[in-house]
Length: 216
Image (cartoon, rainbow, N blue to C red; front, side, top):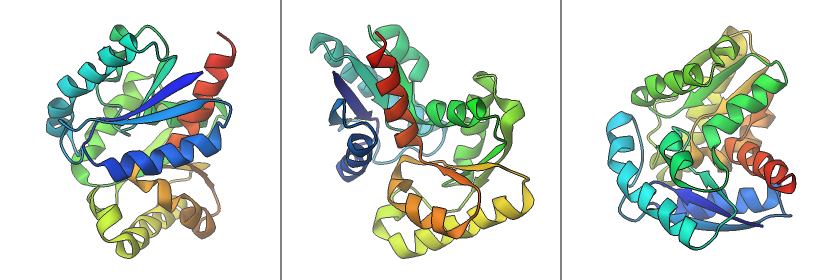
């Protein structure tokens, strides 16, 4: 079963990092990674999401033509998720959507550690739109820009871990969600640093897609 992991931003190295994680999480599926080269280099807030939507939908149309079985939108903001579900014939999952539902199915209270403050209202609105706001404690910004996760990995890791520790200490949570696709390389480091469950959204989306496709 062929699944396309589509990165709505134009940073190819991020696509490759997500693809590696998805393949490890669901080896039964055949993943391919597409990068939206006409999208912005990173998606931070509503304006970037709006800029990314048209080229993303063009890739979804291409996926229909190539008979892909499923699509994962590789942006934690779940860029144009609902528009994509109306366009594509198979299942479409957002990595944010998948992480939120994973936590909710376990009846976990969760916080999200994301990148910049501009992303916070987008994520909060997405959780509310999915009907899961009662599971959310807080969306926290680490003040790390998306591209800094690759350009300054050590400083970025420290900032994300520090915010994760604050969430664990202050939010009364059962789980922490890493709120950016570019954080896939930080999952193990964050898990070593805090005591609550850490949810990698790419893993959540890949495992959920496996379940969906094996039952269709």
